[in-house]
Each structure stands twice: as structure tokens, then as C-alpha cells.
Length: 194
Picture 1: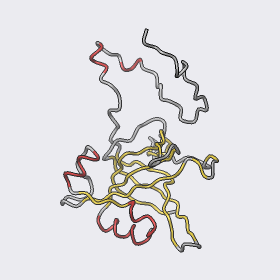
Picture 2: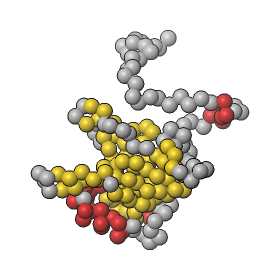
Picture 3: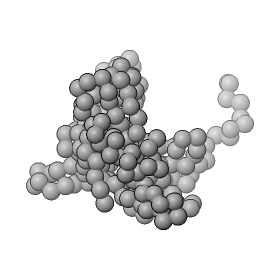
Picture 4: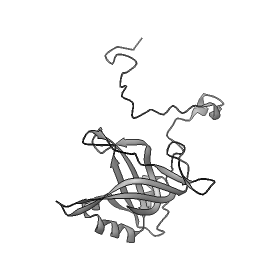
């Protein structure tokens, strides 16, 4: 396995996202890397050269909603690393994990404990897959180690409009993506315009 060090953006591991133009789920992370690392990635993983994107500062801030962490000039690079949740219709072995050093200095699984915000610093472990037929090597997301956490904030409505909110009283009501229960609590064809 290999690693890529950088700033982490859109870490979608605890809640996989739909693949581009598909209902298939995938884990993914964008890693902000240096120009040198971007060139090295494109050279080593030729079949994934489109996974590397270049942005000027304004474009970068518009996409990631944070200042660039790696390059201080006006050229910024990211690489998107992914892993499908299913291979040939069957669940992929062990899902990627988000790890952080605990109080004892050892890495701990914090995948369900923290949502990693854009601009967190860390290392992404990748699995290299070689294709003898195409004579290429691909990089697939394996795990993420967070060294400096920027907690994710957002994604929900501002509840303060409803009154004084005790957020400590909230339970985690995240939707379980693994659930096979797709039944709606009502009939979709029913008219609910009462």
C-alpha cells in the first residue's frame, strides 16, 4: 500500500455518496496536494490522470469553502480517491476507516465519531491495483488518518429560528445507508393535500 499526505476535503466515508451519474454508492475523499505530488500521481497512475484537478485560488475557495492549505501561490491541486461500496454487486470487504491518534498515542477508529471537515490535515492510505491486461496501476481509497482535525460544521438547517435549542439533547438520527428498508411511510400515489 501507498500513502498520500495533504489537506483533506469532502471526506465521504461514514456516509458514502452516489457515484457520478449512478445510484451505486462509493467512499471518497479529495486530497489537496502539491504540484510535485500531482505530477507524480499522474505519472504513476496514468489511467487516473483525470482524478487530479488544478484550481486557481478563487476556484479552490468556491469549491471547498476554505483557503488552500498546501500551496501558497495561485495554483492548487487535488486528487480524488474513491472505492466502490460494491464490487460486481457484492459488498466490498471492509469499508475504509477514519483514524486519529488517541490519548494513548495509538490510532483509533473515529469513523462514526467525527465528521472530517474541509482543510483537515492527514494521510490517505491507498490500495494499488495492477492491471496486466492494460499495463496500468490504479489507486483506490483504503483508509484515512487525520492528524489535524477541522470539525465538519453544516449540512443542517439553522434550528435557532424555532427557539432556544439544547443541542446536547439530540440523538444521532443519521440515515443508515446499509438499510434494505426502502418502504415509504405513505403510498407515493396518495394525495396528501388535505
